[in-house]
Image (cartoon, rainbow, N blue to C red; front, side):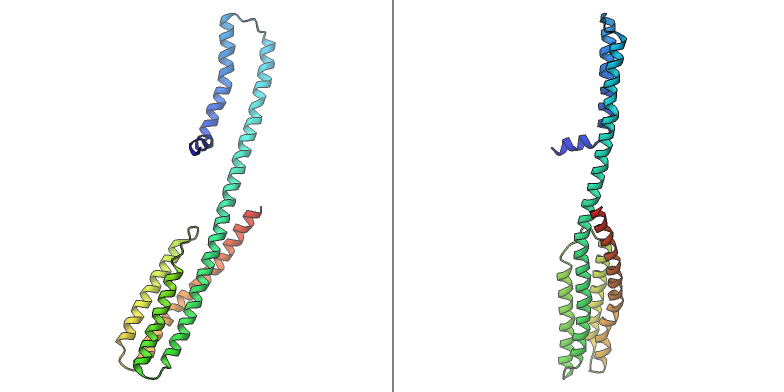
Length: 214
């Protein structure tokens, strides 16, 4: 069935059919002339008039089919984009929320009594943040630019790794806050980039929705 659809969709199929459509009557007319058939020229002119009149109608039908097919393809693509953009927007909002939550948790961790308690609480906050980000990125979004998502995840992982190393290196309550806030400071540009992507994604989604309704 798929092979038949592929053959029908090939534009050369229609040119071949058109050629045969014209060639077959010509061959019949020539062969009858050689065989001495008595069919008059008027009969043939009437035949050709009605016969060739089918061609414009067929071509119009064909091009209307192509146009409708293209419109359906664009609508299907737009519907997929709307669906995947919803998921992408949701993921961006979750990451922004997790970054805000991380900042709050780090602030609370620094207020813990005792250096060791502070240090462990900061690392636990970062670990929890890393787990939440990994869970978010488990969902793939085919219709959305993967480069931005992949680059964002890579950058977050680098920041998390570096921040954990810095926290581990800290020796006292004086050093710890600066090293603990490294993660939140470095995540701020990512947060801004996510907000920018949210604005653009909503614009693209609105265009796709309009395309579906046309």
